Image (cartoon, rainbow, N blue to C red):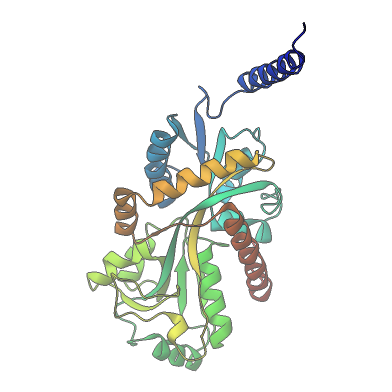
Amino acid sequence: MKNPIAKPLLLVAALLGGLAGAASAQPSWPGAKPITLIVPYSAGGSVDFTARLVATKLGERLKQSVVIENVTGAGGAIGVAKAVNAAPDGYTLVAGPDSAIAIGRLINPAAFKFDPLKDLAPVGMLNTAPMVLVARPGLPVKDFAEFVKLAKASPGKFNYATSGVGTVLQLAMELLKERTGIFVTHVPYRGGAQIATDVIGNQVDLAMLVSTSAIPHVAGNRLKALGVTGSQRLDALPNVPTFGEMPGLKGFDMVSWTGIFAPAHTPAPIVSRLNQELDAVLKDPEVRAKLQEQGALPGTGSPEDLGRFVKSEFARNQKIVQAANIKE
């Protein structure tokens, strides 16, 4: 007599076997192929430092090598574009800084031909750092309010330096100018190494610096700090107020930031796994300590959080660029 349930059991077994075979045929991620993390600037800078710090720990967690590739040129456009055009398979990422992701296309569309809101998949925030407006030792002011009064009395007499046109440093100062009604001339440098030296030497009146660059000089009494662009005071400079605390500047909040991005259409499970591992790396006490030594804050949040943040940054920056008529 035939067993009435034998045939169904055989069908179930065959189905399960087929599913198992299909699953085993799918390549696992990450496989033997190394992951490339593009840094769109030269080695040795702050973005490169943070990327290398995180890459080592990320590789340990993924049990796969994460290799840094410095792809320089056009203010970060070439490096980001290489990531945009890479295969969306999780093996190419880019450490995308604010200027290349949320500013560059607004002032130099010929170089930044990609759309960061469409052509990249946000993975997670890497780090943020507020900026500090510093003044030369010989400038006769003790705070920002006194500088505003001085600048209004002599429009165009004073100047400020940043590491280049279209940087978040310039946009932060241009927004301060707009909200206070002062006119101060922008002096763009090629990179930031020389800026502090020239401000200390009284060759430039002011400079907008990322906190990592400003803190040592302010702490050493070589520069005067007039204000911090972030929403909270810096632990290293507790007596320096935020601009948001000052009359007429309520809500002022701008930071320098770098996020991790993948090419658009990278599978959601891979993006989610990368975000989880990045979050774990940024909670590592050693990583946090090294970032905080640099005056930076470890990033947090989901891919969706980063996507919303970039969209809001792009919209705000567009208004600043148009109001100040900033062009490359």
